[in-house]
Length: 75
Image (cartoon, rainbow, N blue to C red; front, side):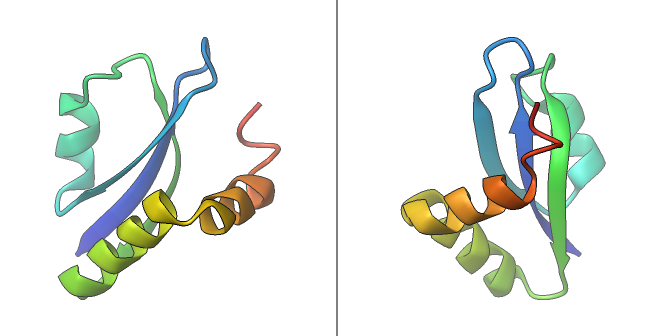
C-alpha cells in the first residue's frame, strides 16, 4: 500500500502533507516528532498516491477542502 498523510503540529498548528509506502516507519522518522497524524489515505497504486499528494500540495482548493472536512480534528 501507498499512503498520503497529513500531520499537524499542535503547538504551531502548521500542517504537513506527505507520501510514503510505510506509514508507521515514516511517522516515526518524521522530523516533526511532536506532530500528530491527523489523516491518511491508502492506495494500491503508487501513481494514484503520488498524484493525490501532488494535488493537495499544489492546489489550494484541494487542501482547503480537506482541512474543512477535518476542521474538528485540526483543533
